[in-house]
Length: 304
Image (cartoon, rainbow, N blue to C red; front, side):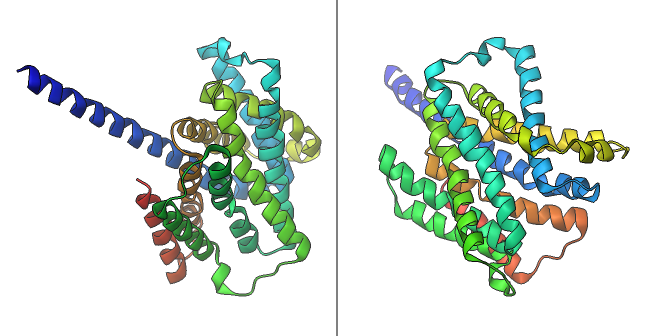
């Protein structure tokens, strides 16, 4: 009887670990999927005359407001951090989130959208390399295969192989820098997560990127947009479902698995964005796009 109990305990521990692991993967992919529906809100706002930079400002400031209200209601102690750790949130908020957005949208203005997008998705490779250097995370064959599959898949989904693309040296630099800044959230965020909860890390990230976004605000465009009846609902969708919530979900997952794995799994974002374009706006899915989706999903599955 005692021997049976000893055998049952390890089984329960293994089952519990597997359940937590699945919840972590689900948190990361749900966060990335919510980022993927960003284009739905963006298209409506751009139709109202909003610039890309104004949308970035509204996302960051709106995310800060939503997170502040939520923490006030749930647990105000989550606001507390130590002064010596402000550097981490300057890194995640200004250096990563804000600079990534500025570089990405600037790249889009002078290069093909597909080029801008695929350059951003060099981020998982950057995360894998930096994680190996900083935390000795092993670059396994499985991780490399997943990285190759997801990068190839992103290239197919974004249309890099379709031809007719434009790129300049300045655009290339902006795109690579955007991918680097994007990757830094997974790197710097991990340092912050050693001291604080995912919600606190996300909140203080938005304190910095929200304040930094003030110079992107264009009040006249906001006032014009408010004339539309569904403006409030679009803004709420943008800041809740494609900003605050996905960052909380991704950061929660980042606290529990390797940064490299988390970044590779986040590559489901362009897949969801493509599906949203098809479902919401009737955009066709080509054979190459379908192959790209399959590659990304295969790469993510390998990591499970």
